Length: 98
Image (spheres, rainbow, N blue to C red):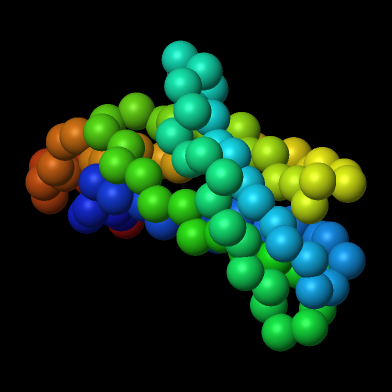
């Protein structure tokens, strides 16, 4: 169960080691850009780059498109954040099993 409205996840992309990688993120529900030219950092010398994406998600699931580039090639992916729990469960919401 989630207790916070803010969700954070890492966007990961594979590029040649030592590059400068940027990422743009779009909210798919309204096509708005929520990150512009975010700088991705390399994990060690692996060629895997990460960007910590944090977003407030009210009550519904939200989906995002990420586009990472090193100016020579582009990688894309999707982020799904689950949304804040909008009701609290009580013991009467559960079925007793015997």
